[in-house]
Image (cartoon, rainbow, N blue to C red; front, side, top):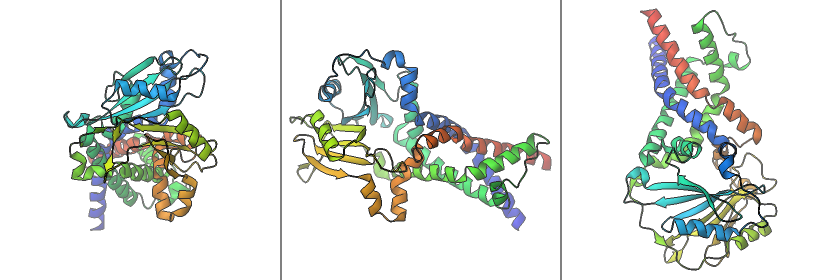
Length: 378
């Protein structure tokens, strides 16, 4: 009975390995690229994104107006690249929701890179268009296979299958787990099968926690795709045509509230979110407060503004928020940093690039071992 159970678990583990291996290879590659997307994009497209320094940069407020003029019906825009060096451009991410288009275009995202000295548009295109920027497209593919809400659902279901694959792997290798952890299970290099089996065991054990964290934090972001409301057409947008407060002054206020604040995003809504007659379409500065542990997501601290008056609506200090939460809530609060690979600073980012393909290796090598074993038995 126990032998039959073990055989069935091995079979489930192997077939899931085949299914998971293909998409995990793709998600592993795109995920590894995402860790250094901005740096790679700046280097690969340096001929486009490198600007000639001028005397003064244009106000951020003026640059936002360029974006809004080009996308008047967008939901809003986010600064995703702030100029740090004199030759850096500024980059915007523009969000468009349109229920009249096919489902995979309901929440289409656009990119716009601008010369901050003269306002010239250097590059522009849809994230869903691979010819616009492979790196930006790979981010959309990683999130939803470039297929909109349905793609997010597929990613979610595949993530659940990955978790089952991890559990069945633990059951199969439970006797070797501790030995592999302390390097007491030598790899036999006699042939392809024994060497692959040994590598599969070691990589599986040593990346177990990593893969569970990746699974959980990813599922946390896509779980909404299991709700039917996720597939409803977006509500008609109400454009905010009232006079906007000056964005540069709002950014100055952030520095007064949190000295040394490192901006990672600055979102400006182009529409109104009306709740009980009140406009809740707020501007939001998101980033890092000096002294915040690296395990906290880099954009967890924020200051929200009334976009029309420029007054502060709310403030979030990630350090203070973390102290208020119990252990489980703390884990969920920092979970995104596990998925993004920022929980140990540069070390964890490099680690993610190196081991980001381990789930794909485990899935494909495990299925190959099962096929080899099946042929031997027959």
